[in-house]
Image 1 (cartoon, helix red, strand yellow):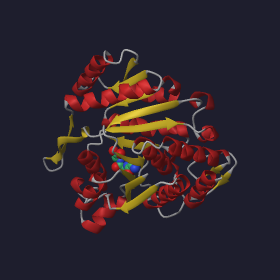
Image 2: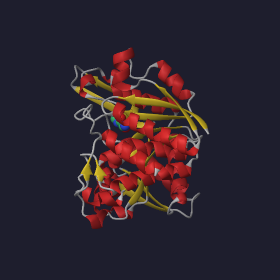
Image 3: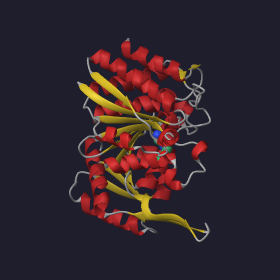
Image 4: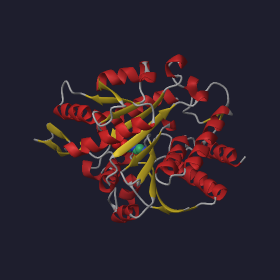
Length: 356
Ligand code: GGG
């Protein structure tokens, strides 16, 4: 298989963990006889520094012609004082919107050696396996106006959704539930928000097309509590953009660290952008201690969702699991015993397990 992959390392730890993903993919290509060609482009703060914009035209063009995109992370204090339209995060939101990557899949599955890395009790998290589906191209993140007014004393953000944007993500969620255990939890704030009332209405309408799927509605505050008290009550969880961003970060506590979570942002034709859920972690950038596993697992999602390479994706996931079973862990993983290693060593351990 011959594939063109765009690499957008971005900022902070993004560059270090991207190198890890590239090395793992090179190992997969030589083990399985594939050809992956990488093309690196700028995004986020890195792009602001080089080209004066968080999302340069040549990055957009390259992504439009790619088979898949891998992204590290964007953001950092260095760019905090810039006006909102020029922030690194605008690059990430812009590429998702431009490419129409409306479905953000965030699988949250604990690896058993990490059960004691979580602050939650083992019996609470044991066996939890959740797919969070976050709407990615609408809601508060994109609604206009979004601005400061009246000498900076008044602020406005607009929560804007069109019916079809809700319908397509809700369809995706029902279809994902059918591929798993036929159970869907829809999260909203329908007791307060008009947008949530339309969301709930669409979920109920759509549920008639998927009679085999059991649907549960939860308000976002109740969902936030239940995620960490009864995570085994969830299978597929679908929600709008902001709620999904927050709930998936919260759910990372089930896996022991935010550094473990991968994500896939896809559209209907399979084109996708794959990135770890975590951000650029400027406090540890350049220290060689960032956890590369969320990025490596994102590369596995790319092989599965964009290229249909299920066996290769499983091999990577198995190699990651073996590393953890062997006790290797980066400092963010509070594992009892084992050996603490840095980004490069962890990557080498994954590659060792892939090749032996
Ligand atoms: N790899 C994820 C990342 O860089 N996150 C920073 C960010 O801009 N997050 C906002 C979002 O994911 O919507």
